[in-house]
Amino acid sequence: MMPDADILIVGAGAAGLAAAIFAGEAAAHTGLRIVLLEGARKPGAKILVSGGGRCNVTNEHVSQDDYWGGPRPLIRNVLRAFDEHRTLDWMRSLGVALKLEASGKYFPVSDSARTVLDALLRRTREVGVELRTGVRVAGLQVDEGGFRVTTSDAHVMLRARRVIIATGGLSLPKSGSDGAGIAWLQQLGHTIVPTTPALAPLVLRPGPEPGGRFAEWSGITCDIRLDLRAGSGRLLASQQGSAVFTHFGMSGPAPMNFSRHLARFRLENPGAAHSVTLGHPQFRDEAAADQYLRDQMAANGTTLASRVVSMLYPDRIARVLAPEGLRLCDLTRSQRLRLASHLAALPIDVAADRGYAFAETTAGGVDLREVDIRTMESRLVRRLHLCGEILDADGRIGGFNFQWAWATGYLAGRGAVAGCQADASAA
Ligand SMILES: Cc1cc2nc3c(=O)[nH]c(=O)nc-3n(C[C@H](O)[C@H](O)[C@H](O)COP(=O)(O)OP(=O)(O)OC[C@H]3O[C@@H](n4cnc5c(N)ncnc54)[C@H](O)[C@@H]3O)c2cc1C
Image (cartoon, rainbow, N blue to C red; front, side, top):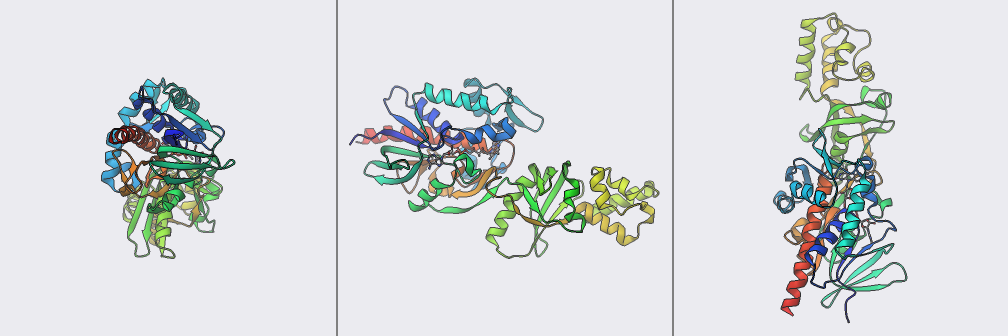
């Protein structure tokens, strides 16, 4: 029986669209038929909401150190095959003018994610890929010489020689990414590194101690450091950068980058003692904060303690951390040390992160060692390629997750075409 597609791509998010475009370009004049299936009626929902609706497409500097998850050398080789410079050239070729912001993030000049999505969809059509939306795939079976794919509407069956799975992870499930592809790959024998939300805001427990009074800081943005320590006191993870306090806890780059470390520690060490502290980035420990207070005291002991703290943090935070109405010279040693500890490592009680519904990406996924990263072809199931968030690699905030989607999509799209050609010449 003739297949319905030579290459069937499941999922038209960032990775699936990149795979479709690069497959379409590589297949020019070959007669290969490429079909892209998307479960949602409109593709690219996550692209549209990304970067606050502006889509941070990549970063000025991208390396394996900007990612967590699978083995570093594999992540590095993927990123080398299609690096940030290739992304910039590619976006330019698609007609998307980009601008670099001081943070190192690249955005479209239009400040609109729609520009990026429209350009991707236009190019997908130009290269002859057939996009079918509102078609949700329910299952995938290996068939002789290819695959049978069943769709959820009336169980239509499609046959394809090669399949690229680009169904994403579990973040933002309302966009259509609910981890279905991860389940198929597990059934096909792949190892799935257990998943957790990543890049998610943190929910804090309120309390009478300063760290529990975060609701009084709601709306404040400032630079902080978050440290995760084991019960022994050993430092396990540390993230610093900007944070926004909210009525429920904290959001912004530092808490969101931190969230995956806490989630994975709790997943991998259920019930194990640990602590999370919030500190000012200027102080690596309590001794450094205490030295700062003593220097300030030596310079002008009659300064109010809250005033000294408000040189570091906004007033509303300073009022909670510093003893009220006391001058530096009035502080007892224990009051000064307590203030130093508030500045360097204020305990906060993190109940949880806000989960997949608010996470920007997924930590865990298909083990990278089971994929030939030159073509993103599964090492377990021939002719099956994988790309995007479904894989065990998650980037920090800053355009790194899209860079991963573009790079893996590039490799998978080209790899699938090369694979079809190799299959044909072997036949
Ligand atoms: C709010 C938010 C903001 C973000 N901002 C940024 C940013 O500015 N920069 C950055 O680098 N990253 C950002 N990210 C992360 C980035 O969006 C993701 O890393 C990226 O979209 C992953 O691409 P993907 O194609 O692998 O998966 P997805 O984008 O999740 O795409 C998967 C697609 O597959 C479809 N699908 C799933 N299952 C099926 C099925 N069974 N049948 C058919 N279709 C299916 C889904 O509908 C979806 O369209 C953000 C994420 C969120 C949630």
